[in-house]
Image (cartoon, rainbow, N blue to C red):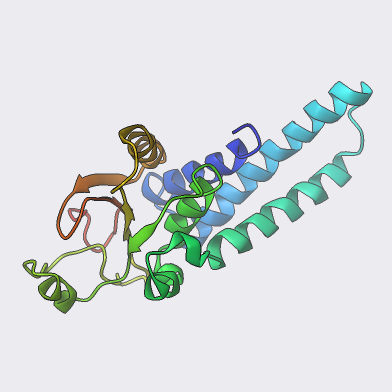
Length: 200
């Protein structure tokens, strides 16, 4: 938990910059990456100082922190294990998600490796195929910025404690969460869309 904390701050910072400060999608990521880099430098100063009693080279710490944040970002944004996807189609839909949503799910997987994403990108006809009424405004649809703003996570056959903590994590990060049935018990997570600010 201590090791992953700076990257949880990465997610929360990105959501804050995107929703509260109206940064663009990628600018919010870059801004939060800067905050995370600073936190990692603080970590390094603390741990290095605890071991040696010295601060050490700040330049080396900055370079190492930048490498860690860049490596983490690339992996979190573009790689999603098939073990965490309901099926191959869902795995392929991962990169259609808003990058802040991708960061959020990739980060929590480090603490909950049994998490399964069941759905992401949808079309209006997909609801009819599932026996549901088609929705006009769904954040599962691609928004004007080119990204999908919602995904679903499996809650079936998982303890209420794990599901509760998972929902708490996404809420704490600033996302909208909704636990509902539909075609099966799942947790719906969404990021506010400027195209459809009322939609979840």
